[in-house]
Every structure is written in structure tokens, then in C-alpha cells.
Image (cartoon, rainbow, N blue to C red; front, side):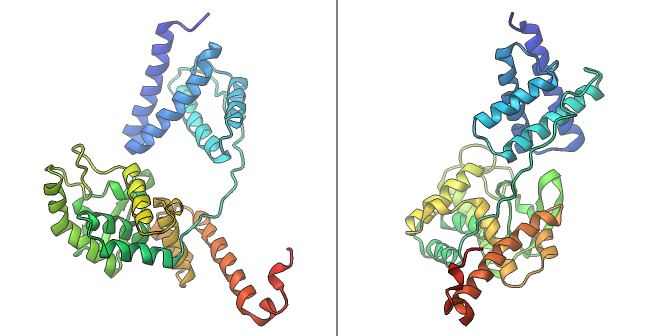
Length: 321
């Protein structure tokens, strides 16, 4: 017997109430809201064919869902994220008196492997920036400012697209960023980034809107020609690949995340300390930032192997560890 329509409506209602609570009490971003809704819908879609209500699901139902996630070859990180959403959802149901027990309480999170972030070579980024600077594309200042802020300030792409014209202070020497959990941080901008920001903000932004025949009263730093909002994360990823491809670089290598990773890695390689990088990136925990030290350790090992006499003369790099 399938779940009655009123039961399905009740499930949707409780999901909506949970998300509204997060919006009101935790001030989550629209991006987080959509991600939580997607994860809850994925879980609900798994339960429905088995005639199981998301409100009444048991521990073994969640365990079967975990098996389903592994069967879809999704990563441990994805599983951990989905379980985190379910933990919060069932905690909410218990707190509201909708159910008396927490079916996910005894389920442990998988141990997610911390992958070493991949960064781009400095000469790759030098070539990319130079190509944009020399380009005849009318929107080149948009592209340049995006690249400079991702690589030069280490912004997350979600932080980048939601910048306002008022986000820049003290003659564009600093940018105020609202990161995960709406935490505010102030990031100083290097001179090339300041120049790109200044040119876009006071000159090219208006030309961009005129050229694409739209006008917005909103103060988005990167307004979208397609709606009264800002450009999207997907748009940023797409234009980065297009620019890299046009410049003759391997476009598969580039992404907004890799520009942020490159910011951290190159800073560390040139002597910046971890605590400063942690603050600039907006990491709550320094262990998140410490993963970048593995990148530089790998590079230092290669330098010793290739340039120290005991390395290249003895075939040191061919020895298996």
C-alpha cells in the first residue's frame, strides 16, 4: 500500500519547516538551503518506493540508504554531507516533538579521505592573466576581475558571485567577504587586484550593463544580464574554461576552486604562515588549512630529488618509499 497523499504532503511540510528554521535561526545562504533541500529530496526519493515515510524511517532504513549511496559510487565526503543533513533534520523532528527517537543517532560518519587540493602552476596563471589583459574581448575586464579575485584573494566562487559594490573598502584595498555560516572576514588586495577591481567598479561595470542592454538597481558587483541578480557559479566556471581554451592552455585543468587552492599553495610556497592563510581563506579550523602543507612538501621533495647532487646523481627519485 502506497503512502497516502496527505502523508506525502505532511513530509514535504516538515522538510519545509526544517529549512525555514535554518533560514531563521542560522541565517543559512540560499546555496546551503538548496543543497539541503536536494539532499533531503534524494533521501525521500529513496524511501518512497519502499512505502517508507521520511518522518517514520528507522535506523535500518538509513543504513539501506547508505548502501544505496555506495552503490551509486558517491564519495565518502558526499555521504558524510548527506548524513549531516539527516542528523540535523531528525534532531529537529525530535525537538519539535514530531518523533520521540533519533534513528540516525547510532550511525557513524564515514571517514572521508582528505585529498590534497590540486593547484595550478604559477606560469599557467601568468599566461592566463596576460592573455586576458591583451585580449580584444569587450568583456575582458569582467574576466580579469573574476580571475584576480579568485586567485589574488582566494575567494570561494560562492563568495565571489555574491559580492556587492559596497564590499570593497578603503579605496578598494580590502574586500569584506561573507563566507560559510555568514562569517565575515576582511581580505587585503594586492595592487593588481585593486586595479582590476577599481577599473571594473567605476568604469567597465556600467559599460558591461550598457553593452548587454540591461540596467539593475541592485548593487551586485557582478550583475547578471539575464535577471535582476548576480552572475552564477556555473557561469564563472564556464568562462574560466573558455578563456583557458582560447589562450591555448589545458582548459580541463582550471576551475574556480583550483584558483582558490592556487592562492593558498603559492602563498605558502613563498613563505606565508599557516595562520595567516587560514584567516585569509576563512577556514574555521587550521587543520583544514594544513592540508596545503602536503602540497608544498611534495614540491620540496621534488626539488631535492632534481637539484641536490645526492638526489639526481644517485637516482634518488627512483627509490621506492
